[in-house]
Amino acid sequence: SKAADLINPLMVMHRSLVQTGFEEVADGLLVDIIRKFSTFGLTLVPLDIREESTRHTMALDAVTKYLGIGSYSEWDEQTRLNWLQIELSGKRPLFRTRDIENLGASDDVVKTLKCFQMASELEPEALGAYVISQAQTASDVLAVTLLQKQFGMTANKGNMMRVAPLFETLDDLVNSSTVLETLFTIPVYTGAIAGKQEVMVGYSDSAKDAGRLAANWALYENQCKMEKIAEKHNIELTFFHGKGGTVGRGGNPALYRAILSHPPHTIDGRFRVTEQGEMITQNFGDQVVAERTLDIYTAAVLREKFTDHVKPTDAWVKQMERISETSCTSYRNLVREEPRFVPYFRQATPELELGSLNIGSRPAKRNPKGGIESLRAIPWTFAWTQTRTNLSAWLGVEAALAASDGDIETMTQMYEEWPW
Image (cartoon, rainbow, N blue to C red; front, side, top):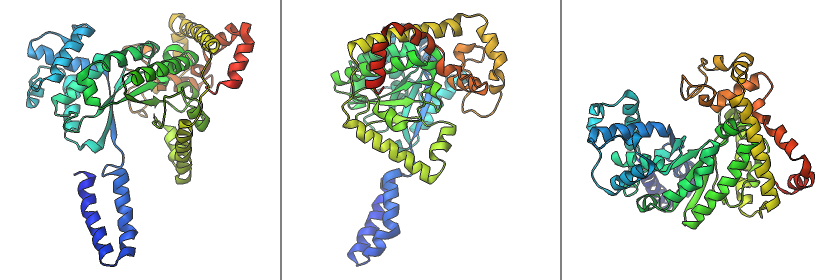
């Protein structure tokens, strides 16, 4: 049952005790319990669900083939959007829920559909955001919205999970504002989100894809673009920052200053961030440390709302564009083009051994048969950490700084005046 179902009788007990002269009893343990239920509900914290966009494409492909209307995976983006909008506007389901096992679909598709079925059976307060990994298009977002509708999770019923696309490669970050522009012009979608949208941005995978410097600039620049698109359509945008603990995965030990240095208008009192692995123990493993960490987060988010951000000048922006492009080219030339790199990486680091350790929440690779490009950011960074070279934190930066030697004055000004 919902927390409110339990709070109501507790409030009746509280009022009864107060009215009969037992205020001290009422304001003791009973008040503590009421406050805890009001704050944490019955679930303590809501659970996010995260799945790759390709899994949703596979699921809808199986559904469209079952319906005899074609192959969803072979449709172009506009065809997908047209069909998704029609189905979201309609009242009929795509198929009878009890027919999941009879769709003739693969085990992976059945697993994806049963995940939505399971979510539909939980109370709304038990669930948070549905995060779409490897999100690239507006149809990726509408696909999840439609799959929720199939199992009765809609805005009208109040049990629809908010859908958060995760943009985590350089190309996806660059295209993110176009994706939001498309989404915010679709009435059936904007009507469902009630003026609020969450977007997750990936620090780890973008750094692995383009190098740390180029990735950080892409994150800054495209968060600003997305914020402007949201403002244009009167949508309250919340960014969910997918960071790790190490510098190569977006980590920053100077937490308070890091939050204040975010792009202008991209926090505005709303801030979500991941705490992963050993950082959970480091920041929340002890009660005193946990309270201190939460104090820093709270103080920084409150302070940021009243901070006059330093906006980069045109000269700074041009300089960042120039050195990030140089950095990205240098990084990719080594990681992607140098034929000796992959053999060296596998011989110099325990990358292959890490994949067999039972210490992660996910497989080391997205595609077991893939190469470096399919390796997840965590084992990529962890492997280099074991050699103490920490390559993922600095590769490409030297080339960028060398390319900026001709404009030391601008670089010095940026360093001294721009918190970011």
